[in-house]
Image 1 (cartoon, one colour):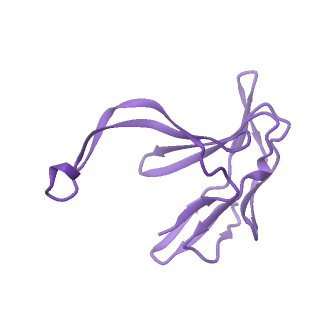
Image 2 (tube, helix red, strand yellow):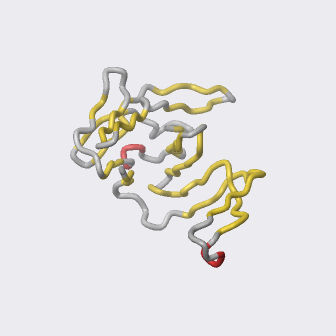
Image 3 (cartoon, rainbow, N blue to C red):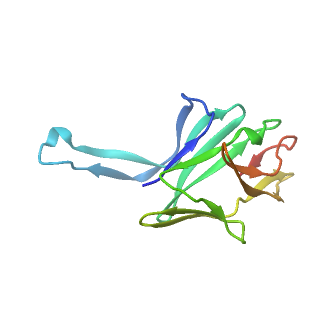
Length: 151
């Protein structure tokens, strides 16, 4: 098992659910109905606001995969974002720029970061790559003076 930690982040970000979906979830643990959880609403995404000053993190499902976006507001400093993966040793960056996280049961692959901003209704890509530092995984690139970036 691997645990993702956002280093130096807020310990109490505001958490918001976005776009309720039609489906409901049910969790039946054991035979005691008092421990069951039924008709739990589902949402398109969950956003953690101000994980770092001016930076939100949006979690969402994409098929069978959990993904997240780092949303950087104008003038926020993307270099604040540092990610550590507990439960893995020997993290590396592939020739393609993907982050390879080896585990005992296999490997987690995080694709090369895709960073963009929308200006006048058009998506513009910003060159970015992963960097491995003693303090954690970082995105190498800049969004600091741009209108709004999505990592």
